[in-house]
Length: 113
Length: 116
Image 1 (cartoon, chains in turn blue, red):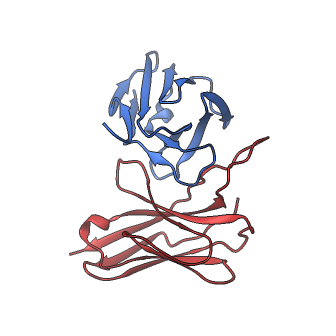
Image 2 (spheres, rainbow over the protein chains, first blue to last red; image 1 turned 30 degrees about the horizontal axis):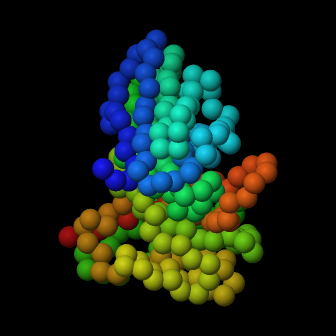
């Protein structure tokens, strides 16, 4: 499998649930990103990882917890989410941090009930 | 980061050439211009990037005038499958260490609808 993959593609969870989103890149890139895209809003950068180290956290609530165990995998752990957290969560990777060409995964459509 | 302005939406018939213009009046010397395409419920896809004059690849052309305060993405002979949102981004393409980092800042983009 090539490119950036994300699982699951769709997720429905209650506000008291704990779930995790997974991202995997097969491109040999050193940087990975989490973005959030809400309906009718621009993409918002959430987290940036470079060589498995978190280098950016754009004021994201603590109910979102990222994890990067190695340069190919990225997780977003979710707990006690709110309905307004319902959105498309996109993972991306690039050769190095800050590179203009990022490769995006298909996203996880999250619905919080 | 340089602010960009692009039309909210555009319509075009199949087979026509589509030009989407983006304004970026406060572009910095080190900034590059990058365009992405996004289909519904999918992640954005890199289309093309340039610094000045003209860049062409198998998908599109990018025209950048000498003052670099605007750029035009040109899609030749569009088809229904080109219906998507197109984003213009401006920023430094060279990663740097230290506080902060270059990041892609997506605006609202231009929604292109191709009509049969």
